Image 1 (cartoon, chains in turn brown, red):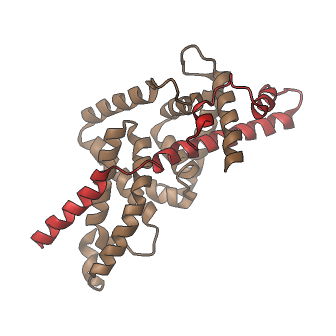
Image 2: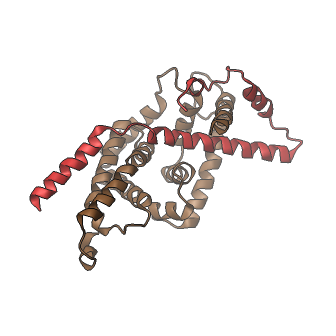
Image 3: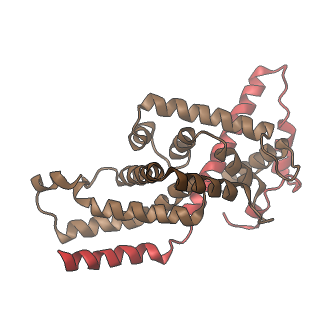
Amino acid sequence: MSEQAAARPPRTAADDDAFKRELVQLIPHLRAFARTLCGDPAAADDLAQDAMMKAWDARASFQMGTNMKAWTFMILRNQFYSEKRRSWRQSQLDQEAAERTLVAVDDPEAPVALDELRQGLAMLPAEQREALILVGAGGFAYEEAAEICNCAVGTVKSRVSRARRALHVILEDGSYDRDGASAGDAMRAILADAERLSTVR
Amino acid sequence: MGDENAKKGRPSRKRHADSMIERKTSPDPRKPSAALDEARLRQQAIGVRLRQMFDDVVNEDVPDEFLEILRRHDIKTAENG
């Protein structure tokens, strides 16, 4: 990554400062993306920190003025999957922890709809989940999401649309079970929340 | 966002908007266009929720460790280089 840096003008302290300012502003977004990949908040913060440091170390290879958010998300995602490859056993444990976190929401005050949306997301295939999150929540264009996921734009589009349909079905049918609450309740709660949120914003 | 209402997005809580939606939740099979609107409305609702879930984390305070790690790393590289 950093080999090409020699061809560019030498980095100045001002370059580093500008880079760092932008990187620091992205930390909340990196944490949010990591949370959707890991589920477990502590593991997610570890991942976000690793990605932040990797981005900082690779700063010479970043072209200022291009999309740093997409660039750091790509680093974070690569980090996540390379850690998984390195130790599939560990990742399986992480996965179990993630599922526990996603399922065990003990807070009685937690909004029902959010709880069930998390569970619904956990049931999607990983590649559909990340595509939906990048486009549907992270605010990325399909092209940017494709770059982050290292796949074709059409692939992202079809993953997002499959994820949307699947999530709808999961929430509607209640393929999960939560204290005997019926699926209709989940969808109704989401609709009620969405209605309220859209009037607030 | 983090107000009282946000914590109580439960179906049992009847307010004007809720009851309006509840009436719409049984799509009429005889009217395909109404069912289509219904599906679109639901997709939008899921989208809003999804964004909120993500934004909730974005809006959390960043733990001090993040900036601390960046700062410590800086000192280390300055000493080495």
